[in-house]
Length: 177
Picture 1 (tube, rainbow, N blue to C red):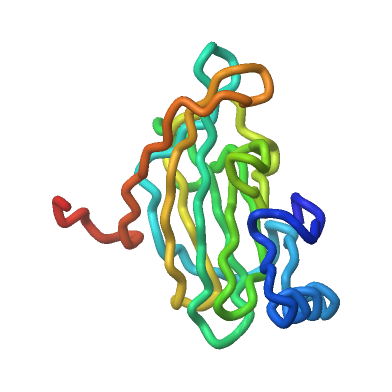
Picture 2 (picture 1 turned 90 degrees about the horizontal axis):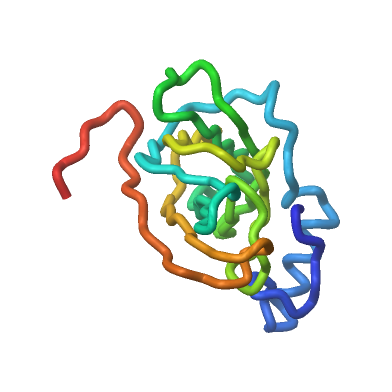
């Protein structure tokens, strides 16, 4: 995981039984980052806007939350693309094995834990990229949301705003909502 298991992190349960279950999933290798290549998956969702930049006074990073609603461990992949490119050449990607009912945050680059805990960070971290992302998985039962964090300061210490990005079923049209 991009962030080691810290007993008092924002994404760690405080209930002792839930914490024990989380530790067990980690121990069994059921909650882990994956190598991006080599595992079959199907594109499920298109995140219509991704922005990840660090070069100017306003910095940005895209965070995509995925909840596994399947009854099995689901291997989820997020691929990031520049706006003027096709779906064959991602600028970065990340993958994670998610146990049933767990939520994982995929990020285009790392952010301070005070803003959000990034469980799986894009490789390479994106620092001058704008475009879209595709969320793929082995099983279709996933819930997806996405947002762009806008920050200031060299270490993203000042939060300026958070915007939601539209998520649509891959290969389908937007219904205008």
